[in-house]
Image 1 (cartoon, rainbow, N blue to C red):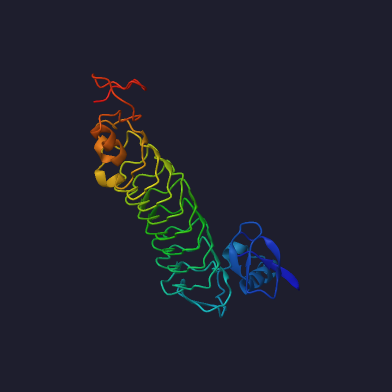
Image 2: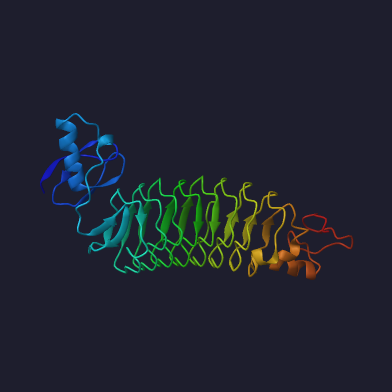
Length: 305
């Protein structure tokens, strides 16, 4: 395996790379780069005393990728593990759509948009979305083998990004994300998720997540619009007082949700199916035990209104 000197096109680090490969990843900044470009970069910066940041004149000469004006049009390769070149700014809808052979992908920070890019890639198991990516709407819809994902804080909003990812179990949403709409809808293996304090809106975010069991909503959230409807196994939730109003549709189908920490639970008890049933049967809406004639719980001592 012959190795030669190259220079990372992002951070300028000098590396030893295998010259039989088309792509490589920098050991220092984890940026993917085209092998030929890094070799040229090393030669120019070492013989002409030019810094790595000034080198931006080499085009991709890679038959596996069809790239035009920063847009990845088509991937023609046969590898199941793909590193997107870091000159790509947009991954077009047709690039990997329903590429059922694709197993893993590394998306560099140069990518700004990739709507529908990997939709229906049913063998995709691993995704590395690097910081800098801002738009992943619909990008991984119906990737039914994807098990875990980290959302970098460069992504502010997500719509339908992972809808139908039925094997998704672990999600790390980093601080900075503010709006998720339908992002994890029908992710039926997802049991829990940590929502960052930057989040403001979660409309239909976890709809139909039938394995979802617990969630803590941070104070930054103002609106949850049916975010948890259809979460049939959801048992525990903490809702901050920043959410002043909820509707029945917000928790429609949450028949096991009884452990609720919400300052306005008494006012909105009928919006929670199990709590509404307690009230209907004359039981304490907080713990489910019997009430005294004055409406005070005999067990937890809470006055029901």
